[in-house]
Image (cartoon, rainbow, N blue to C red; front, side, top):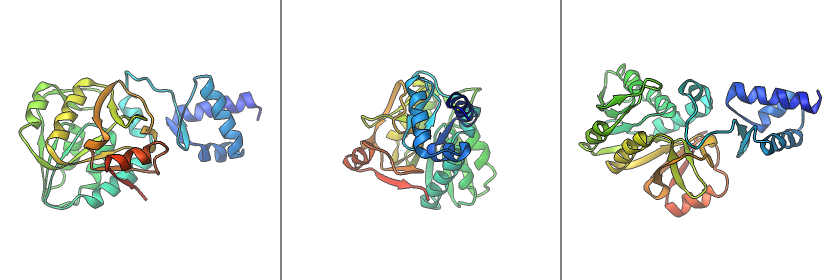
Length: 254
């Protein structure tokens, strides 16, 4: 396979999967890791791919998130592993808030056998999943429902969240930048997330490896506001030091 043909096939593979590891690409095309890294660097230099620790993804905008259906497929196995690690640490008979995101939806599926949960959410998909757990009380925030992902946002949502103080907030995030800031794309969604963080005794952030170094427009929180971070691979530099300085417990899902 010529370099030009391999580059085209590599781009097609990333477009189909959204993000993929360097190891998987090497296996897919029957070439060495060094060859794939060289290909990836050339495509990244051309602005066709974005590199992250251990893999590549399509270039992302700082103003607009990837579509919901595509996000459902992206890093699906990794999100499931994160969700299981989270569920193992969520105690029975506690109160939770789950916000908008495909990773929080994966967590909801892993909580189906928990007992005595009281869950507040501004995510209709989370509510629909946990409604099938007869031993879980689900409380849905009021507000405006976004058709694209069934998230609930707006001032009414913020006011509703402020009525509560829960044991644990489970927060999905679009990106963690190299300065340690947690960021997202929709300022209305971020306002709700801020209220959630401020009304939880513990804040657990859920972020697969592609979120490290990913840029987004709206500031949501600082790492020192977070108690635990759940991810699927050891965070790349400079994040281990940032997490340690902020006192965040990092859990890498097995």
